[in-house]
View (cartoon, helix red, strand yellow):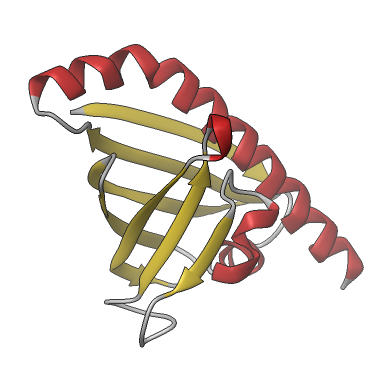
Length: 150
């Protein structure tokens, strides 16, 4: 398993960050994904299944499903990733600060093909971390601009 762990600080309340985080269909605005949509019911809370399609080079795309395993609004969103590429567990963790919200996003991931896939994933971990940092920067900007508009 490979751990990818990134964090940021948002100048917005945990409730505002949470609202942006779980606006599933709008995740394409901050997450590197071609599409995001809820599969079946429910559309919020434990058991929610979200399908993300990530565009790859050459017009290829990989779909993975995320299943909500923890739902503590404004505090923690736990997820299990099922897909053809990566599998694993992770969470978004929010903590109120004097100036807003500390946001941490971590995932423990396993690649396809057992140990061979895990070795390949370990090589790509720095790229995954960079992509996650960029995604959090976009989520931060969206959340802060939404908070300023209120």
